[in-house]
Image (cartoon, rainbow, N blue to C red):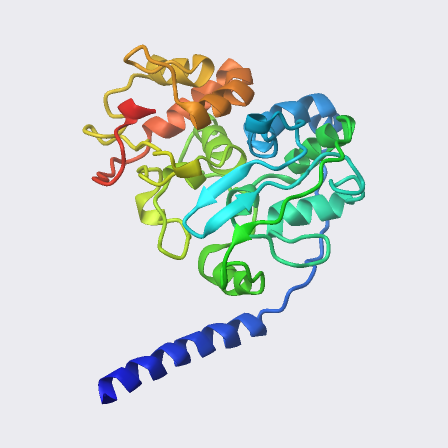
Length: 314
């Protein structure tokens, strides 16, 4: 009896500590001082369109299965915590982001905050987007604002208590989120750093190909080693240089061909979510960016992950 009471008391104490810490970290708007590139072409709609596809915005915020309008939201994202529905991010002023300022947009990607200061759930991959430059974020915004407004209403998420409580994201962020832009590694080449920036920040490969803790945070020590529970319940293969399940047997041309044409080394075509990544994103990149991604991926140390599918199963 004493043991049972002790366990209940300990559980309540842990919950109380989480609530207390969460309440200490108040919601609010971080001050944003935009660092715009001197070359205004870097923030053009044309360049933004490339980044819009590469960042997965078109994929996630378009309900293709139900013939939804591009960027009008509604796509269901199944997770262990419930179903999240991507919001409307078109230039519509009622349901989209047409009324957002540049600062609002950058704050969302850099800090995971809504314009009212509330936290976004990490189904929105701001954990990766935070590392993008202000210029790239603003280029994406320019592209969105140049597209037609779509009036599709937003669907409420289908997630239960306590995962539907936004205030708990304060505590989650303390555990799993560090805001800040990508920093070049001086020990690596310029191409490697470019590949790392594209892969880790813009294309957010780690969000799909890295296993997670029960809390939903990424297991950084198993970076890109794959997971059996990837996006929309699909498997995401090991991208490290592990010889058994990773990319250890893939040549540079093999990887480049996959990123540009979506073909695997066995001649098959990549699966649904990865197909979208190629179709809207990597296939539109210039050759030097593809080569940079390949250099980065080929540098990843081998990580054996028996729970992840083989890279043959892209």
